[in-house]
Image 1 (cartoon, rainbow, N blue to C red):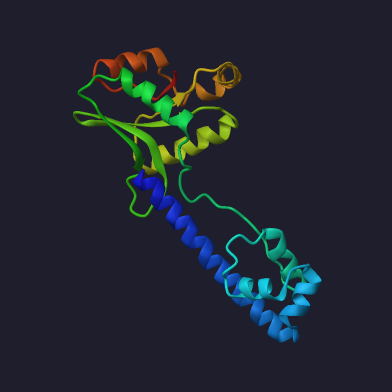
Image 2: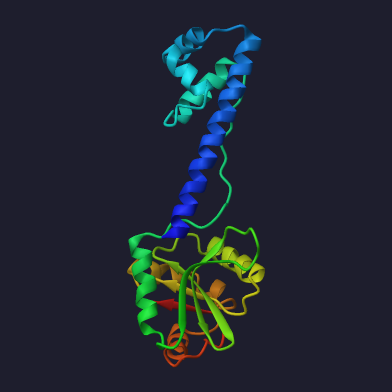
Amino acid sequence: MAARERTLDRARHQAHRSLVAIGDEFREARFRAGLTQGRIGEAVGISASEVSRIELGQARRVPFHTLAVIAAVLGLDLPLRVFPAGEPIRDAAQLGLLARLRALLKSVLRWRIEVPLRIPGDRRAWDAVIEGPGWRVPVEAETRLRDVQALSRRLALKKRDDRADIVVLLVADTRHNRHVLRLARADLAEDFPCSGRDALAALANGRPPPSSSIVLL
């Protein structure tokens, strides 16, 4: 829970800083153009007071469309892009999937969720990590598979950067996911050579899987 709160707090802080920076740019551009807040408001369809709040970074729920139109009126361009900056917050289905795996582990094994990669400052995290005497196996949980190739690339990068020898891809046992895995079987075979059954048997006996595995639960 603490990790989730930190993620949300960081996002709120970043959003506030961005709104303040955009407001500063708008105000400077308006001064250069010799326009009043009322004139900007008329062109965009909002009040002068709302323009003022935007320039001060105080319009916390201003639509992006409004910001983009103000930028256009001022001769500016306001692009919007997103970048990977961490892991998404786990939903109830994903937490339930992780709980099902944990229930099958031998009790002596250590279980942790939302474990950051072993790189200082890296915001990525494993959904869970299983630890035994002298070994550590990260777990990535997927409730609904989409782009399997993209998922495989992402796991390969995390595995490399975290210096992990083995990873368990935990997938919800649904008709959709089974169909996707059948279609991608050839592409996944090299990266996940251990069967899910063998991986679960090893973990139930307190041992790590012999190699990376896809586990359906």
